[in-house]
Length: 419
Ligand code: ADP
Ligand code: ASP
Ligand code: MG
Image 1 (cartoon, protein in one colour):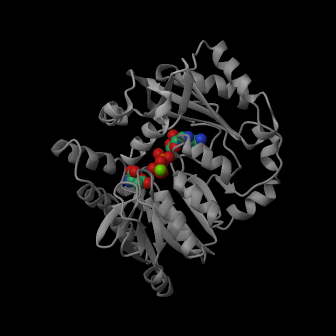
Image 2 (cartoon, rainbow, N blue to C red; image 1 turned 90 degrees about the horizontal axis):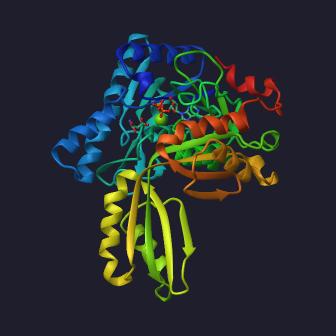
Image 3 (cartoon, helix red, strand yellow; image 1 turned 180 degrees about the horizontal axis):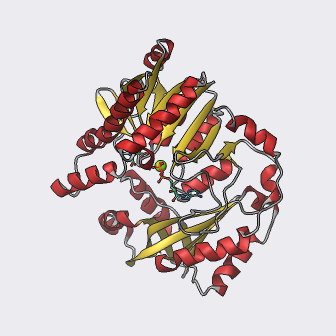
């Protein structure tokens, strides 16, 4: 089999951990598999690099920021290549550009446009074990990064481009759980989850996989497994599954901290006000999430929307620039909020899930500030101090009991048992 293995920050957080990863890679290679490894930066290296940059300038130059952040992965890739060499394998590190990862010309969140596989293919043909830096690529002559958590996306893109049989995401939990096991001790590991549900979970804040990794895995039909680099437990398969999710209405609970709500009050109705507000914010790269519009009076419109808390000041600045064009009456900003979401493909055919979510939160005296729904999720904005309790109570209400299994364990173990 050709396998892409990706190891996250905690998994390569120290020399001991890198040695353990090298052992795991060696085991797969010695079992006759062709391996390509993708690594994240060691531990909290990327956070530390961000801190250094901000100590110089609160809004550092984006080109230099990418030049800086991409160094973290280069350290771990080179160290892992050395550790593989010590084990008699021809480990060889590749930076993003050396591995042919071509991105769009955007700094901080570039999308991969192409993976030119020549270098990796000749490395594999020469019997080497390529170790690729995650989270980075090249646009023209400039180094770009894919966005925080983006090494997962590198791994999936490399797996797709090389037509790998399997892409394994090794992390510090042994799979995808019904919710973050750090918040709910009784969270259960899922044997499998569909691409669509995983994408929704990831987009709604479940950090365990980068949303674009899931998007690409679905698009290129990459077999994806999330598992632990600290144990040999079977992980979670992310699959194009039909059927299984019908056995559970809610598959998981995701959440996002540090959300802010901005209300723009009294926008005159005739002026295409909403289009202007959101068009202007989009042009300036402000990502807007939940939007609620209410008609208060015939002449004016009120709208409120959420952004990441760190974007509050920038959003207010943009809206201020717009004041003369829009003649709205008032802007109100509220920080310290969070978003909790229930996700499940089974919701499509099960009405009343949203109502149940609202009553669970009401029973817990957790007030809901905004709501947003899609076919397979319901999200509520709540006070961030109440977030953990909201997640725990929703988990208790929707996920405390394991659903009946719609898939045989044999099917699952086929993919897991290659070692
Ligand atoms: P890595 O550095 O390996 O990429 P991350 O920190 O990005 O690891 O992702 C793993 C973390 O994701 C876990 O430690 C866990 O706290 C968090 N997490 C959030 N939601 C979930 C979930 N539903 N299932 C498993 N882990 C989750
Ligand atoms: N090192 C990067 C980050 O911390 C990328 C990754 O870990 O996936 O965001
Ligand atoms: Mg991650």
